[in-house]
Length: 255
Image (cartoon, rainbow, N blue to C red; front, side, top):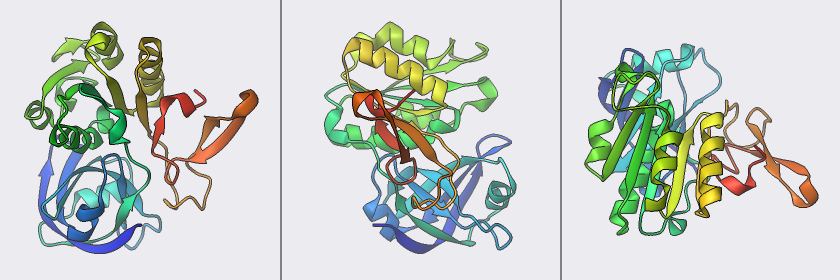
């Protein structure tokens, strides 16, 4: 069940010129947070709709979120400072099923899909797994959270232009190493998720995908974040990313 909490900003950091991390005091939300869930944040009086931000870390009553400035709401959020108070609703959504991971899961993020994989990887390690990560970015300047992932397990960074790490896509790295993993968990752009799901399905291992969709209400009452899912007899049904997801079994999604 979602909790509405007034959260004090403990720390603000600029990770890149457009990517920011906020650490918030949110003991009640942290206590309930599961990997893959998100929070819904009020971003100033002039922005009527809350902004959904994935949970990057939730530990010892401190909630960390990482986001990219894309519009007026996230621009306002990026300007918050230590001591400011935010109206936060969460945790929301359906997260990753940790019982499906097996002994050697791999956590894959692309761009702003990287932050939610950090909490997921941490929980897998705490549960006794030997996790790995594959992180994809446009270029060297866009790389974030690399050291935090490396502290949890083997981590490969790939860049589209080859300016850092492996030159190529996260799907290339997964395809070359698929035999080392027992499951795949991923978050990022839909074309990336589609490619990763196909590789996992061919290898016969479970794959969970966290879908990125624009959200309105965040509770499943509107149709903004509708996504196509498979139904019986080859038909298509629709679910809500905010309520039924954002995490789905890749075999459910009508790619």
